[in-house]
Amino acid sequence: MTGLVCLQGGGEFSLGCRAMDKALLDRSHGPVVITALAAEPGADYRTATANGVSHFRVLGASEVAAAPDVREDPAAALAVLRTARLLVLPGGSPSRLLTALTTSPVGELLASLLDDGGTVLGASAGAMVLGSWTVLPDRRGPAGLVVAEGLGVVPGILVVPHWSGGTGRSDWLRAIKEGVPAGISVLGLPEESGVFVDDRGLTAVGQLPTRLVNEERDLPLGKIWRVP
Image 1: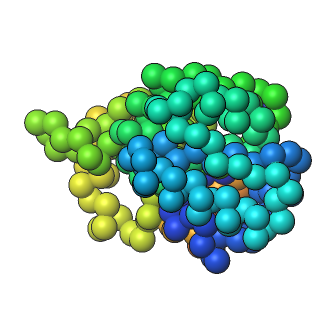
Image 2 (image 1 turned 90 degrees about the vertical axis):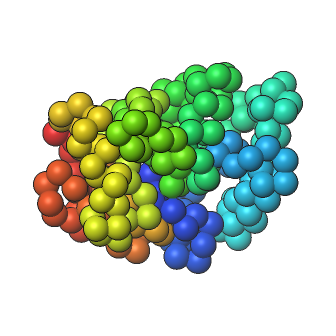
């Protein structure tokens, strides 16, 4: 991967994300495309993408577009998605998003964009599916929450979004401990916060530090960490 990935914990398109997203926009050098595939098709998809378009226009993006839903109009969606230099995946259902990315060409397009030096922003569910593993909170198995392999765009990590402390995610952490291979690093990402991922490592950005759950410590804002 030669491009830039931003993983955010949620609260996307808010005032608190503006400085973080402006820094991302300044590094992207080209059109911004929003595709809210973690949302339900129809009104939810259109609302989420429209919110993203408005947000990046406020930040000064000269070219920003809402991609048609690839689940409804694949040809039109891919025509817009292929123009992206910054591809944005807002939150919603990680199960729905992972299915959309793995059963359409969008997942491969995302990987090609990063190989070409482009940028991908994933917020909440969008961040979760980009790791090697992800919790699927809307699925339940005999042992509780289901965990599954993610896209592996950011290898060796699993994202827990909306992080406000381990006690609020005890069921997630239990499922991760029982279902995820040893050696996967767990990132607790607060809302309006996250990490930039590039060839240097992971840099904490936004309003609050990132929690390195396995190491039981925080990564301060502006500090770089390499996944073990």
